[in-house]
Image 1 (cartoon, rainbow, N blue to C red):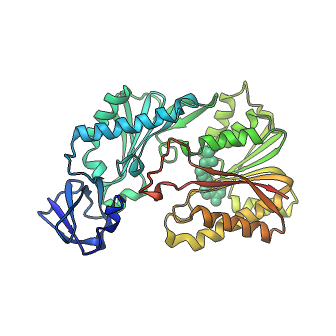
Image 2: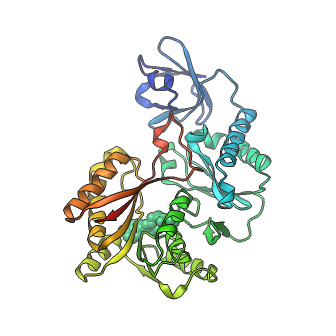
Length: 395
Ligand code: SAH
C-alpha cells in the first residue's frame, strides 16, 4: 500500500522529518486500515519512507523509517533497544528509578510514550500507528526491560484527532496499588499512575528540580503550579527557609502532603504551607498584600500547544512573570518555565525580558534549563524540544 505525495511535498521527508500533512497527499492507494504501514512515494515515483497511516488526522502519515526495510516486530525491537541504550548512556538510573524510556518521534517511534516507574511501565499510545502495533510493542517492552507490569494511560486529548477513544487499564501483569513509590535524587514520591496528570509524574523536570534544590538554601520559596510537590520537596530537603506551594488541583495537593510525610526524615513539614487556588489571582493578591519571596518557581501547564495559540499564551506568560518579578526581593531567583510547543526558547526569553522591564527591574540569566536527558530530541524533529526554562536573578 502506498501514498503518493504532491509535487515538492517530499522536502521535509528528505530532511528526515517524520510527519506528512494531509495537504501533501495526492493519492492513497488501496484504502489502508488506520495505523497500517504504507510506503510514501514522491510525485516522481521515488520511495521516501515507510510510515503509519492516520486517515482521520491532519498529520496523515508518520514515518517509521526512511530505509526500504520491513516494519515488523524485529524493527520495533531494535528501536526499543536503542531507546534503552540512550538512557543507559545518560546514566539516568544513577539519579532515579523513574524515567521516560520511549519519547515518541525522538526515539523513532511516533505516537509511543513509555515511562518507567520502578517495576511498572506506563504506556501511552497517541496515534493510529502506535495503536496498530500496541500489543507487539507491549510484548517487546516486557521482553527487553524484564518489567512485566504495564499500565496503559492512553487518555490524552490528542487521541481524538486520530479518531481514537481513550483507553486506560492494565495491559500486562498485575498492579495492585496504582500509587507507586519512586525515588528521585534520594527523595521519595508517590506517583498516581491511574489518576495523575500525563502518566502520573512530570519526569521531564527531574534535573531542574535538583537544580532548584541546589539554589533554595535559606530562601523563602513560592512554588507556583506545584502539582504533587516536586520542586517544593527538593527545596525543603536542601534547606529552604520556607516553601509555599500553590496549585488549583485539590488531588495534586493531597498527594503533595503525602509526599512531604513520605520524606519526613529529610523534609521539615513545619516549613511548608499548601495553598489551593488560581496562580493568576493569588499572585495579584500577594502583590496587593506586599508579600515577598527569595525564590519563585513558575511551571505552568501548556498555554500554547501550537504556534496558533502563541499570542494569547505570550500574554499569560508575561502576566505571571511580571507579577513574580514584583514579588521577588532584590537578589531573589526566578525559575520560570514554558512547556508550550508553540513558544520557542528565543520567544520565551523575550517574554520574560519584557516582564522584567514592565516590573521595572534588572534581571540576569544564570541558567538555561530544558527537559531531562531521558526526553531526548532528534535533530530531525526539533518539535521534540518543548521544555525551556530560565533561572534569573533579580537585580
Ligand atoms: N512543577 C510540577 C509540574 C507542574 S504541572 C512538578 O514538577 O511536578 C502544572 C500544574 O499546574 C498542574 O498541577 C495543574 O493542576 C496546575 N494548574 C493549572 N492551571 C492552574 C492555575 N491557573 N492555577 C494554579 N494551578 C494551576
